[in-house]
Length: 318
Ligand code: AMP
Ligand code: MG
Image 1 (cartoon, protein in one colour):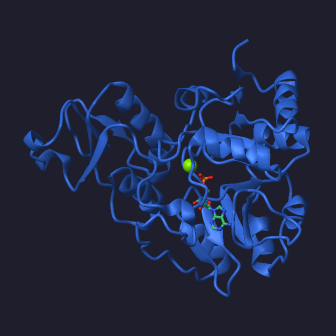
Image 2 (cartoon, protein in one colour):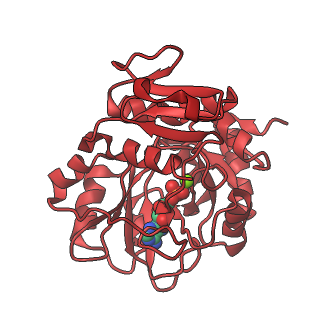
């Protein structure tokens, strides 16, 4: 039986059975494909860390079906969480909240928990069918490119027992992570939900500081420097046409966006949302083509490109 499964009633039932048996299942969300497991089963969560080879200091996001289920995981629920949940859930916003005292699991070692409600029919159907909160990091080996299709999942994680196929992810980039445990909300990871939409609703947000790349605990542990990286070496350039290619390992693939014309390049949209939706698939394609170097035209230094620039920067880090 194929492990890529249609998300019909039968597919959801098989997936929910696996989750209740403390196994893992990959499923589509609006951001990227997630590797899901019962967030409060040590065995199931351990399987996520093992399959992904994810460092144990990097905690997981708990996915729930509704605000009531989210509140049950938090020790306190600040007003700002109400505002944000009303405006952006279901959607690509993860809130870090004080963790309800009776809970452990989701791999975290401190007193907080990251929560979101995914905006995807299949993800919500699976949450409903399993009756569980699901820890679900991106369904790829740690540090690799996040999967935006069911095929990407199996290529990166061939041992996943089942992948629900929801077609290509619409956002194609991970959720925005916002810490609301302190006085002022703090951006931990730029992501699919643009910063401006958040500041429009809640006003001021503290932006992340540069974290040292020492593998030690940090406010958003997943923000280690190297991440989201293809097999090939990624080189960012202000203008890919000016780069001296003699110094780069070949074959060389070029990733640019509309307006910077380069022969033989992968050309993505000049719109940041469309660019983000295609970025990981393009990196997967270049990897599959066997290039040794991916030369990337740096997107504009504009707030709308924050999440894309973050991911490209991490992909380019050795
Ligand atoms: P992923 O699920 O792989 O897209 O990554 C989840 C992101 O959420 C990572 O950047 C984690 O470090 C972050 N995260 C999860 N739980 C917490 C938490 N309790 N506090 C801060 N960041 C968190
Ligand atoms: Mg990930």
